[in-house]
Image 1 (cartoon, helix red, strand yellow):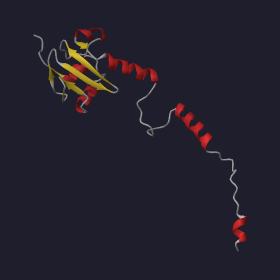
Image 2 (cartoon, rainbow, N blue to C red; image 1 turned 180 degrees about the vertical axis):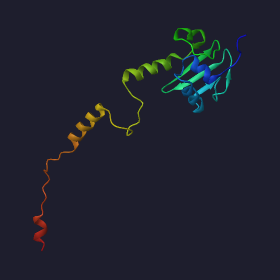
Image 3 (spheres, rainbow, N blue to C red; image 1 turned 45 degrees about the vertical axis):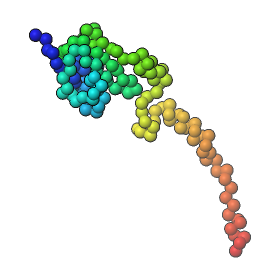
Image 4 (cartoon, rainbow, N blue to C red; image 1 turned 30 degrees about the vertical axis):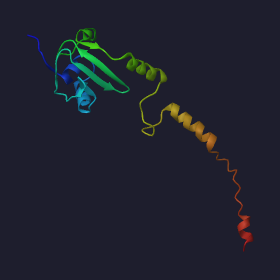
Length: 145
């Protein structure tokens, strides 16, 4: 007899939405997973025809549950268990981000990339010239005495 309910974290891992079950569980705990527009905990049970929204910045993916499974599926079998109903606008946003080459890394964190390092060097060359062109006029101080 087929199951009528399955844990959300296990189902998302089994249908390859997340690479590991731990990542799936963490996403639920962080409030990035919604079932029928309600934030859920990892232990929430889902049923067939539930709508699942998964926020993976910059995109929020939407899926309809077609069937339940607790075992990890091969990639070719995934369409039998979920239907991707993500709006085209979200998918276009993902393409724009990929094309732009923008990496979601906040400025100031970690070591600069090679490209950022070159940009910094060019900026410093333009702004800061250590040519000792500044004239220190110390003779004026002696004339006051």
